[in-house]
Length: 475
Image (cartoon, rainbow, N blue to C red):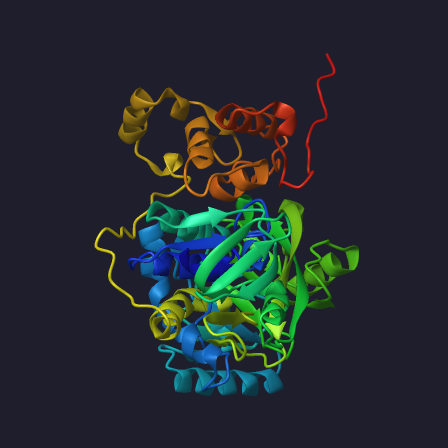
């Protein structure tokens, strides 16, 4: 019997799971995919929003500000890269300049510090590649960037290191109320018993809510992105936004914590978790990027991708106990700034919601720390040599583009949560994320996974569920 079953292995579920392990509770996370961070958390912008955009008094405004203030510490504890680079909302007309003033006033009401409006001269001095048509910007120095999938994987891994269980390929089919709590059943016949449940299922959170008699209208919005190689890393210094619309914050241009440049996302209504890219979508990203900046180095494009973000009809975070089933708590409609808000949401759910149903006693053995998944290239020469003496696998570079070693890949397959396929290794170590996109290293990564897991090479997949890479030997 678990005290808490968390449904959904995204950043919200992962950080809630970690928060739960700070207490003497038996907890688990169930995820329908082959790995955690397989939904909207793996394909978002990675922006730590300052908090000026959300309407004052909303859950978004409250938890955005709190999460922004917590993010740096959480990232440091989990060995995840975070950078406080600041953000700029860029205006291209007098009308948009008025919108900047509105955003500034809203941000100040929300508690955001340091906001100021830059004139044309200062804006162009701060961003030399900004379009000549840009006339002003709202500067938010507390804005930042983080890696969303590293944060999610590290949160779940840290929770597992502290005693949490992870059940993968567990697609919830039914939730039943029992005398002692709940029975959560998967489509493959597995069932778990729990006293309480937290619904963090993203775009499927409405379906999970319906299983316990609640009606939560959750829809999907697809966003397509372009990623530029690290050769373009200095193209912009801050996260650049257009003035927001009702569909979101629009196309952005931003550095990433690993030195790439990210362009996107689009906003297209979808019925499911569709993550296909399209020619029209990519062209939209390029068109908007050209408006924001001059001479955008599209020739350094290394990949494009898409993610689907869930949103509720209320367009605010839904954080509450079920109206029909005692002990079930919903975290639904977590759209932007959900990533930023995630640490604060996790703390709120545990301390203010679950505490009404469970007795929380501090876990004296809880450790908040986790070592970074990829770290070798950041070591000094002496540190590298010392590590290679202990483990020669760190002396072999497997991914030349990113400088990732065999030792780091083997560690990713062994540690919590284990990397079971090549995409999982990529999310943890960046092996395959460089210019060649795995063209040279994927075969070696497959061999390492097969060796570590004790399976045939043919059984190694790209992302689970029949995504086989090879069919058999030719000779």
